[in-house]
Amino acid sequence: MKPLNPPERILMGPGPSSVSSRVLRALGSPTLGHLDPKYVEIMDQTCVMLRDVFQTQNALTFPVSATGMAGMECIVTNLMEPGDEAIVCVNGVFGTRMVDVMQRAGVTVHAIEVPWGETFPDEMIADAVERFPKSKALAIVHAETSTGAHQPIESVSKIVHEAGMLLVVDAVTSLGGHEVRVDDWQIDAIYSGTQKCLSCPPGLSPVSFSPAAMDAMEKRKTKVQSWYFDVSMLKAYYSGSGKRAYHHTAPVNMIYALYEALAIVLEEGLENRIERHRQVHLRLRAGLETMGISYVPKHSLHTLNCVHIPDGIDDASVRQALLENYSIEIGAGLGPFAGKAWRIGLMGHAATVANVDLLLSALKASL
Ligand SMILES: *Cc1c(COP(=O)(O)O)cnc(C)c1O
Image (tube, rainbow, N blue to C red):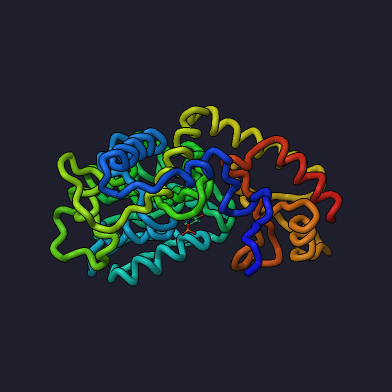
């Protein structure tokens, strides 16, 4: 066997993002039994910090034991029953996946679409809830990582709730890098991932359910089709006040890593962290625009910068040069943007002035 020796990269793609040594050290702490009182305390503290980062009082807030897609699947399979209707907003890869996950759960999906790179105006949401009034929920992606589009949530939430529906939000690429106010924005079910702006290795998907979502889940007539993601069983482990029951073995060391990553977020302060992401985005944007490189979306995320590849430039050879000569990873375009766009992540630990300046000069040299 060759020795395991992964190089140290600067991860500036669509995720995972670079992980700090503090989080890596936490990962290597002694493994405890998942019912050990010491571990349960660590897990409870992790959920307390998750509520702070989600800006919510929701009792049912915990990390699902798998990556972001599992958060999507957990929310869909618990909230929706076969035969239910839902509106899904599609403007990139993750909205498209949401349609697929919903349909597999037996949901009748009303997909509404805008072109990739665009966001949904309020009028379109209002029109959709009027056309499909029997929908139980509307699902929307806050930060569409495939296009870099930043979808406003607050006004959408108002329209959705006035229509008596639940609001489901994908915040995988926004939590810890953009404002995500679960209670103020009245989000009913939200999922994220550890490896984007929280700068923890991939492997967990923080989720949160509002009291209205819990109510909807209690009124289910059918069993949740997924055993592993069934919240009615999981909640006894994560938020039970009494004895914790075994459901599945918690990914103990990953919880340590998330604990440390969340502690870092809260030490920095959410507001400071969001402002840091804004500042580095503006710096990158100014530098790219000086080089004649323009952004794809009109409303760009700070955490994911999707830019047009200049004419005559070969996508793969530039990304390869960045990786080989500078150990910097940036992301390729997806779907209609394959070969036409780059996706530059500025997430968490990697979102620094030093990294932005290094990338700009490396890119200049590589072009
Ligand atoms: C990365 C991502 C996901 C999926 O997360 P995985 O960790 O890859 O399972 C879902 N939604 C969005 C917007 C993402 O960026």
